[in-house]
Length: 429
Image (cartoon, rainbow, N blue to C red; front, side, top):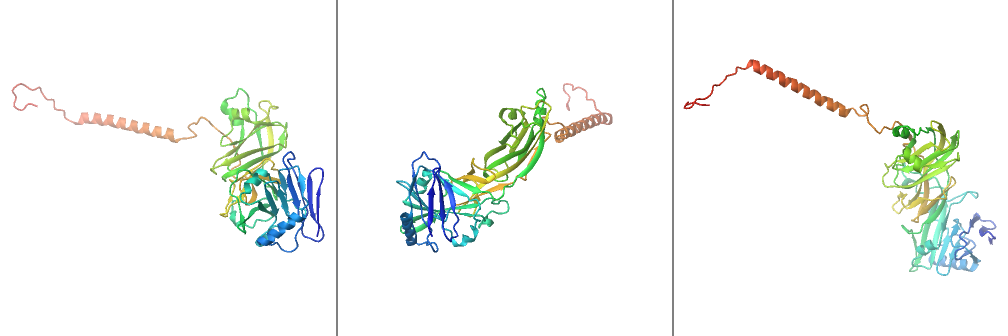
């Protein structure tokens, strides 16, 4: 077999293994051309099974260095698709060997169709320096799976809606090969996961713009507020994608965390959208799963007082998950980053292991908040007035009982009127 390596003027690279192989061709793009250069080398696939011994790895590395056509690229950040063909990245001080070394028990889980979109990672020199601690040559093993081999770790309340990206670090120390993960590091690993299915909840509603001279309570009642209970702790991102705004595409929208938006809050901080298909997001981090998220909606500036706007939107909650060593999927080591769209989830992770993303529908509780009253009446809470009435009734009963008893005693009892004492009496009182 032979290898074709090409680099065009737009700094795209393409690797293709020819003849009869099961290797699919993959492509990537180099970015950040103003930075110092990396050297990128490509090596042909070695026939036969992968050798896991130190001798086999050193032999493959020697073939890699011998067969590689090293090309200087004006790039530091490299967009890397997981390929069966090894990739060698180096500068004057550090080297990373990227290879797909799939364990035998996971072979059946990474079969992807030739035209299937591939998840990929990007990393820069700062992350490479942090990964490279003691060894000059670090192997970064990467592969993608459409299925989750650890599905039982998710439980009934979680699900993975994207491809899984497996990232492991292989070090050679004291003539031994060590496969390891990194729990925490300061420079995030940018992971782009291909979405298999995007789930969302369809919501429709309306809102009326109050009159300027209305009572503050009536103004607050005009704000259409939806509350969402995430039910999960950790990092997440709330997506609200509008599909329709009628009759005029003008709307005030705000997504808030823990604070229920009122009229003044909406007028001061709400975002005005004029695109009927606009998207609004809220990135949050929760320590308590009972904390509420709010979506506040009010007619935009193009509406006059008393006019009604009708709207429809789709909402979802996205979380990036990393499987820890203790077989637990945790959302606290990754955040949902800015390049997320319905086809790709962009995760920035501070932990290297198995990475996936969950796209959940907020089934509980997405409901419109109505009949908000800031002044409670007797009908809102009958207990205080009832207690007061009971106490007053008891006081009245006791008062009349004591009065009648006193009158009865005056009539019934014989009153003995004592005379005054005289000096010298023997039995004076």
